[in-house]
Image (cartoon, rainbow, N blue to C red; front, side, top):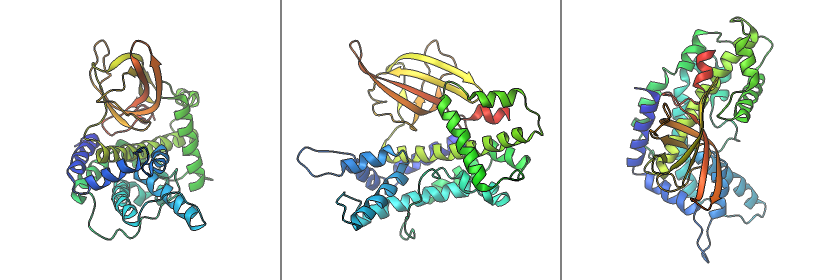
Amino acid sequence: MSIRDAAMQLAKAVKAAEGRERIRGLLRELNTSRDGVPSRAQFGYSASRLNGQLHGYLLLDQVVSASRATGGTEPALLAEERQLLGRAHQQIVSMNQKCIQLIVEVLPEIKQLLDPYNRFKPVEVGDGAGEPILPESAFAPVVAAFAHHPAIEKFLQGNCKLLPGTSEHWYFQAARGLESEILAAGPLDSPKRIATILDSRSAKDAETILLRQLACILSIRASLETIDQVVYQALLHDKLPALTIDNVIDVGCLAFHYMGQGAEIVYQPTPPAFHVNPIDVIVVEDLPAYDRIAGLYRVEVITHHPTHEYGFMDEAVMRRLDEHLNPYTGLLHLV
């Protein structure tokens, strides 16, 4: 079973979980504002804008709670609400850790590097006591499939040590720098520095070895982040957003480059693609005249445009995900 198939199977189990309605109800309440009725909509809006899934809500609550302890008045989560989100998040984090166990056993120094939440401050989620919110057995197929992620296999077959003269912190900064370059280039292009290295590399060159290691690290982390996002979207919605022949207005660009495949699509923001946000996982169905466009994508940029002809329309710029839910598949194959 591929990682993609295992993740979709997990999403199906999450949608059927007894605890799902409690989480979905809470998240919707936190993001709903009603005239004349006190709400925590600003809290929910700010938490969702962090793009950190359940971690974002727990992190903001941690900040707000600290503010309230010194006299602040911002609304925070109730104790039982924090416990609900915390236990579900802890199950997701536990799955992530099991997925990377093979590589961490060989090189424990990169454990933090592989954490999809490492760009955020850590959150306290309690001791995890109580019944699981999500079905524990549903995570096992994802863990089993992830053991065969090509980035894990490539890393273990190559140089499994940090380069001489470097450290865990050095690698953390190097990985952050490379990913910043990738994101700055956008889904429709690849960083010029990567192209230069790949065009002039030597298999044993230190710069090439480092790029290979970083490509593996970023691919593993991105796949985990995508799985976590699929779970998060399954908590909120019955289906992934979909761009189809019925709502797509134009395909602005379909690009193939060193990083993989990217697409720019203009569409009407109507169901089944009403509210789409950056980092969302979205389905693109077959579109006439565009070969190889159908698949799963990770959205990076959403732009809203009012028009006379179509009313409001949105433009999504996104990266295609491979069967391992990796948006950087091209780079991984090249190194």
